[in-house]
Length: 90
Image 1: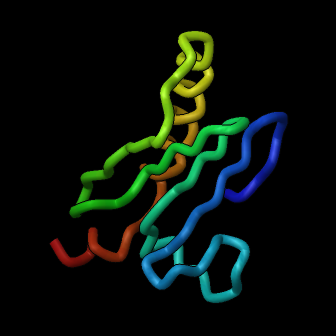
Image 2 (image 1 turned 135 degrees about the horizontal axis):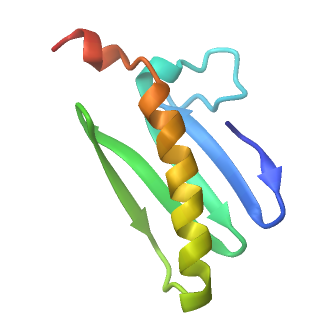
């Protein structure tokens, strides 16, 4: 899911710190999605079973809220399609 488009870059990291472009990357062990939006960083991190945390280190400009919402919505749709390793444990 690592791609660049105007002002957006997304990195996906598994629990072994492999990026989605690495040969050893294991999507079923996804740990973190990093969304770089212009000069801002948003992180979606796996916390427990089906729980994820969204965090940022920024103040949001009111004009960015709509775009950020759309980006998180698209990423969320991809995250729901993944067959996570921990879903087999339950």
